Length: 243
Length: 307
Image (tube, rainbow over all chains, first blue to last red; front, side, top):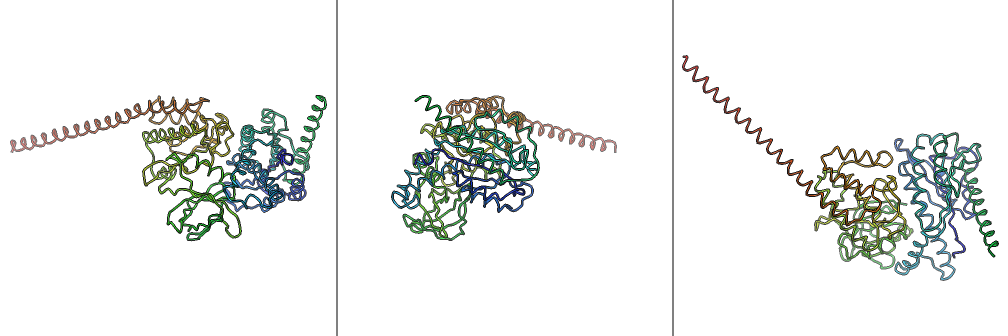
């Protein structure tokens, strides 16, 4: 099992509305899912507007991406990112355990009585702390986010502080979309960069234009896979030079 | 996913033990769960039933509560089982039902005075210290999770969902009391994390308003405290707990015990001052009355004499 899920890969999208430029984000999310990357999405609700939760799209992205969705006020954003990323890790492991159980004993966790289930759940809980996590946060920087961005900046820095306390390795990258062009993202924090690099860029960044969520997901997939590929090949190089 | 919506008088049956419970009312809801007051139909006993999809966190909480079962401060866990509601599988914890109000509800109606806040924090610190001795950090300590048990007049902690083993990462927190949100330290399970949280609770109670790390600065909170009628000694204790990275709970208790009589003296002094002010006023009033009556009597005598 360890081999199957040597690393948890996830994308967390933070947006305040529907995509309005480019392709269908649910299809992009499904593509991520097929590549073993879970897509979670957080919908920012306006505290003053008190609107109904408007975004069907958010649910469809999370479903297609095998992840969770949550609505939150901008003030609670960091708490939501924090709890979503923990949830992703534990559900991913739980699903993997379930799959193994099905193969071994033709039953899953929920079909076991609570007392015997408990040991496995403990194991999942501990393992969730230790398994390496590769996470890409996609921030919607379109025009409509302008008023909320001050808070969002704070949240991002906070998430970094929080995740570094995990026992396992965490690789995190933060992208803002749209970037210079509609189909790319601005890299606020690349994997392997320090928080200080990002702080400067965060404050220079201006909100702009539409919300091309589909393109942004595609960009995040490539960005993440590129990093993992590079990391693996450099590991292999090290090993071969030692050998 | 917040937990299922159940109407009063709905009867649910646990999947493994086959026990039947009648839902009485909703007691509260959290991020991933709902808590109902429920009655065991056989024994007629009341319980708090916490229902959620998140079996990892329920399982963690159940085991934690079991390992703290010797502590009266912490709510008792009786069972863990599953429920089928509209063909959907849910998990639940069966907890001791505690009648009464939580501190958050209480302070909405009446403000706590300083001495009560100090005694409350002493009680909480003692209990937190015991939890630390068992190798755990409370993590997400907040007012709505502390109940004033009306049966035996005790404090009860009703939610341990945020508790973690020492030195692991804090998984659940409330920004208003979280030291990382205030840029005062890391979100790691150390005794000083709980020390900070408790200090923010004290500040919240003293200032009698909500705190928001996105809008307030911690320095301004201290200025605000200094504007209240609080001894400089207590301000120092609060500052130490906020900015010292390795607050020891036992030392913290000692510090508060030292400050308590100082504050107590200030209060009694104030009351005495108030009393003497009242006596002064009474004295002045009675002298004035005395003089006026004399003047009246004299003037009437004089008038009599003239006539």
